[in-house]
Image (cartoon, rainbow over all chains, first blue to last red; front, side):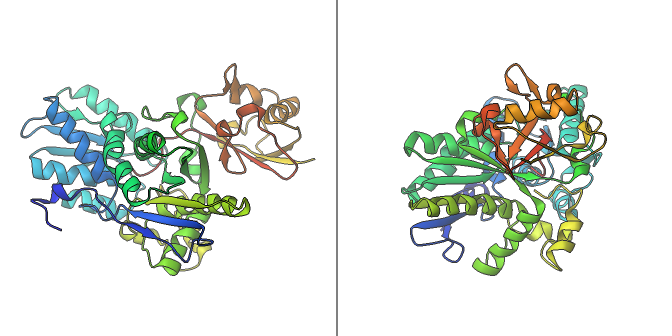
Length: 315
Length: 92
């Protein structure tokens, strides 16, 4: 495969069958390998689209400052595009995210502003919005509300899946900004009658939810509940267990959100099998395991790994 | 009949500090009414006229109840209901 430059190689990722984890030949799991993107995550799609949209709208000029609340993957993706297109990037991220993410961001030339750990991504969003208000010249692409994020998936991820798996019955992805689910989900619903669009949501430790006031919660502006068929909350214990199974059973070295997604997918597979129904379940591997090695997710006992993840934003 | 209901930190002032309480009912609505009888004010933090409050997520056996019929979702002995605040999610 040949591309004129790295940014042209966004998307077009492989769909890999998971024969050992699939319950039967009639109920099959398929992993879409989004780590096969230029910076190694699904966010390359959203970043490319959001920056292209901002350029088209005349918001960005050489040397423009882009600001974004991001714990990592979006920042890394934006850092690549910013670097290649001549913009400066400032990322706001909670201080309790893995070391690899910070190192990668800085290696790409991004600047980091840390927000308090106990407050998680909600706090990072708040801090970023405050900075944007103070610096009107800065451009906050705001992945949680930017329609180009979802549109990236409507125009690329969805069509790729349909082309590779026209017999798709379920689509499962992690729930964060909801861009992947909204964009891919909308596309699939328009083209595949009866398709199920299922969200897998990480359930964090108590520190992350803390004493957050229930009236100050956060729902991404992109989130439209009607696009989903169902939404599952997955513990770090289950996500870790499944992440290790992906590696031990299928040889897939995936990030922890992928374990979260696999857990939900396996639940759907079991349901289909019990009902005697055929199923072709596509699930998103958002990134590989490299950035999570320092979290201890892949070594030691599961109990040790789970204890280490306590209080961390693992996906 | 016992249904375990897990309570987030912010609401434990209503349950005397307990992180999990037990209740009964045939639906989620009945369950919350049952809990409100013993933990006054709890229900109002979770539910408004439209149903489950916007920034509150309620899961029945780990599935978001908004996709199970909301407050009319059927609950049975041995089920687990988990209440969590809506957060921005983790690393994006």
